[in-house]
Length: 383
Image (cartoon, rainbow, N blue to C red; front, side, top):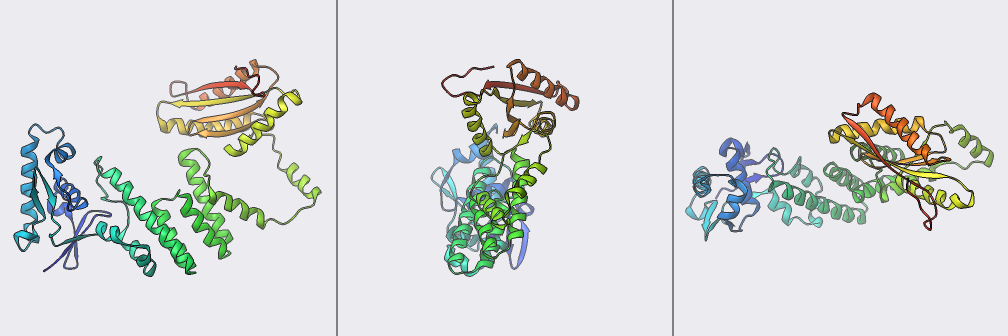
């Protein structure tokens, strides 16, 4: 008995006799989606109501639409069943299901039963099976959570396999499978940490630093916040380990040489530490400092992100070296200002807004702000 294979990862494809053909060429797009839904839930009875809810929610006569689609689907798949028992779509009580007896295998079924021990013997197997995204080219709402579920399942499988390979001392195989998995989820801290750890073990320090820099830049550009986690801590440790020692005079000269007179931009954890230090010093040294939060609102999310990127440069260049700021969200900055009076905060915001509105008119982008004096918690006052 001939068996057929349906590949759901990537473009849904039917494979037979060594030949591959997109399912949409055989069934059309709607029937392909319907067949894939049945195949993903193989052996499960899917009710009429559920099918109508997913595929014909706005149909005038959904029952007829469902029956006609099932009729067409069965007619198209008859050629792939030698007997009635091998029919792909079976009628159940108030629903339909993809038959367990149908002579069809799928990549999802193979992935579902695959164990790390088997994959560790042949790690390249998953690279050839899982490419792109599940049901590429289809965007119905029911597909999206399934796509995320299977991506997480595959990544977990890759992580467990990498751990097994690491135990067996197969460093190159660990690097290969983690690098492959990072193509599916580039911002996974666990995957990045394992990948970087293997590079460090192999003393591939420059490669590790280059990889992290690329991830760091991509993450910051996409989300507007710093990439945090164990992988970042590992890279910071690696960087400090590779630095040679300095005399106190060399350190002083190096730090003085870096002074450029602009406001200091830092990541959020550093900003929090500096804020706490500034708060403790406020009463002891009689320093007037204010925390300023700037919210950028654009007519679109994309424009808001672009304007916030521009605002970062404006803040850096317009404020003083004693002023410290960070990006707390995609369209939000937090700034610590050392000022003598409350009214000076408004002047700072006005100056920053005017600079930003030279490039982005107020009809497109506006800055909203909140400010508060930095003091010990026992007495706070809002501006």
